[in-house]
Image (cartoon, rainbow over all chains, first blue to last red; front, side, top):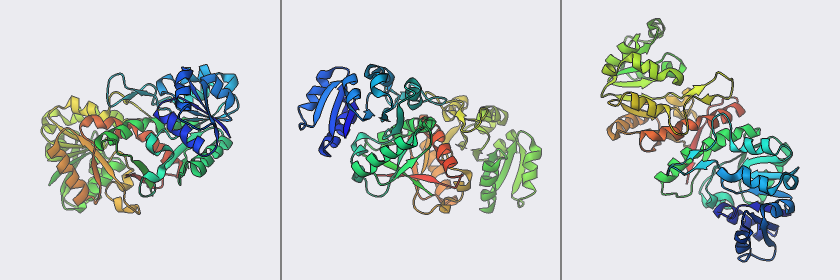
Amino acid sequence: MKIAVLGTGDVGANIAAKLVTLGHEVKMGSRTPEKANAWVKTQSKSASGGTFADAAAFGEVIFNCTLGSASVEALKEAGAENLGGKVLIDVSNPLDFSKGMPPSLTVSNTDSLGEQIQRAFPSVKVVKALNMVGHDLHVNPGLLKGEHDLFICGDDDAAKAKTTEILTRWFGWKSVIDLGGISASRGMEMYLPLWVTIAMRNNFTPFNIKVVK
Amino acid sequence: MKIAVLGTGDVGANIAAKLVTLGHEVKMGSRTPEKANAWVKTQSKSASGGTFADAAAFGEVIFNCTLGSASVEALKEAGAENLGGKVLIDVSNPLDFSKGMPPSLTVSNTDSLGEQIQRAFPSVKVVKALNMVGHDLHVNPGLLKGEHDLFICGDDDAAKAKTTEILTRWFGWKSVIDLGGISASRGMEMYLPLWVTIAMRNNFTPFNIKVVK
C-alpha cells in the first residue's frame, strides 16, 4: 500500500521504517524535504521523501506524526485537496514544553487536537491512535510483558476498522479499544500529563496501561 | 482512630461505612448536618454527624469526599483551624456536569484541584487518592479480577505513608503508586475524561487500570 508519514521526528521515522520493512511504499513528508530525504537514504528503495503536500498526495493512508503544536499548520501545508477522503491516523499530542517538564497541553478539556484537525478537514477520516504510548511501543507492543491496551477513536467506522487492521496485523497490537467518536480525543490527549508523570518516575522505561474489569 | 468524612454522597457514605465497620470512630460532616445525621441513623454507635467544622475538628485524618466544584468552599467551612496539620485525603474531582455528559473539568492543565486545596490550606497535608476509580472500588478493590493500581500524590511523605497504610491495610489495595508531589494531581484529575469515556462505553461496569511494563 502507498502510505504517507508526515513528520521526520522519532515517531514518524520509527513508524515509516516499520512500514518499509513490511514492504509498503512509504513517502515521508516534511516541511523541509531535505529532512525527509536524509531519512530516505537510510531506507530501501520503497521509501521516498518530499514536502508535506508530496507525501499527502502520494499516500492512501496518512500518519500524522508532526508535533502537535504545529499539526494543523502542517496539514494545511499538506493541503486539503491531497488529504480529502483519506484515512488520517493522528498520532500527535498537543504538548507545550515551553515551560519545561512536565508539559501542559495547548488545547484540552472542552476541545482537543483530534477534533481541531477533524473540523479543519471535514472530509478527512481522522482516527486518533498511538498517542497514548511512547514511540518505542508503536510498532513493537510485544516489548512489554503481559497484556496491554491501545485506544483509538474517530467518527468514521470504516476508517477505524482500517486503522485497527494496521495496528493489529502490521504493528502487532493484540488489544485495540474503540472509544467512540473523535471527541474522545479529549480523554486520550488529557491522559498525557499522567503518562508523562508515570514516565518521569520510571526514567522513561517503556510502559502502557491495561483496562482491568 | 478518629476519622472525619466530609460529604454525604455515595463516595463519602461508602468510605465512612467501611471505616465504621473497621471499628473506627467516624464523624460525617455536611453543609446541612441533617444529611450527616440521616446517615448516622443507618450506622452503629461509633458513627456520628455534624457540620463540616464539627467533623474536621473531630478527625485525626480527614477524607474530602465533597463535590470537586464545591470542595474549596466546603473546606473553608470546615475551617483552617480544624484542618491544620492533619492528613487530608482528597478524593474529589473537579468535574463540571453543567453541559451534560461527558463532564469537563473546572480546573485543569496548568493547575488542579489538589493544588488549589494545598495552596488554600498550606499547613494541611493533602494527599490525592482514590479519585481515579469509581466509588464501588474504593473500599473493595478485590471486586476486579486481576491486579490493578491505585495512584496517590502529595507533598508530605509521612502523610502519603499514612494514606498508603489506610489504602492497603484497611481498604485492601495491593498496589499503591506514589506519583510524587501534589502537582501530580493534574495528571490524576485530567485522567477523568478518559475514565468517563471508558465507563460510558462499558455501562459503568467497575474497572480500573494497571501499569504494564
